[in-house]
Length: 81
Image (cartoon, rainbow, N blue to C red; front, top):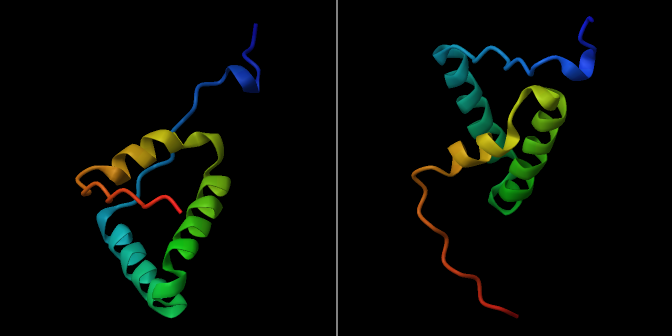
């Protein structure tokens, strides 16, 4: 029996080499500067949604969130309005 598409294991995309990752960081910083501080959070959220959509099921999004949150200070609790 040949496995169908649903039975194939997920294959992770090939990671970017460090020099390419550095270029991504530089372009991201430039894009954040262009959209401005007031739009930074919305821009980053939209960017993540575009990247998640394009990566599809090949990327473990929950793991990406965990890795991105490592070593960050806990945000202060927001007051209830």
